Amino acid sequence: MPGLLPLLQEGGHEAAGAGPFTINGGLILWTLVVFGLLFALLWKFGWPAILKSVEEREARRIGARRRAVVGRPGRRGGRAAEQSACRDGGSHSERRLHVLSRV
Image (cartoon, rainbow, N blue to C red):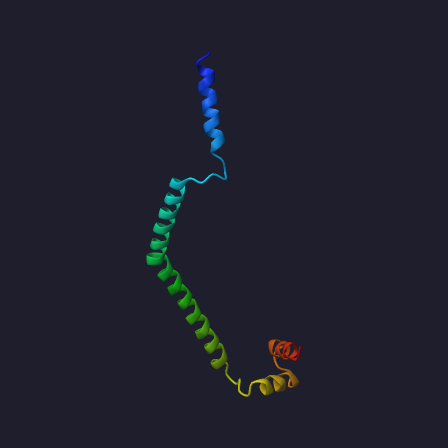
């Protein structure tokens, strides 16, 4: 038993030196290595896939907007057509659009 007490006290001193504010060079090195590897993998494989999906989404959005504007039959004249549709008792959505455009 007397030999156990000095060993426990030594372990306590080592543990007291390691805290949240101590600098560990090995940990810094491995953190940078792992970060660099993940960054390289994402640069090679992740970024092109994300960029491709964003560009496809943007193209679909632009195409849908063009179809919505061009594909409406009888929609010529812009705001004047909307106002005449409201005066002539147009559809509910056209009247609502006219009311919202005045706001």
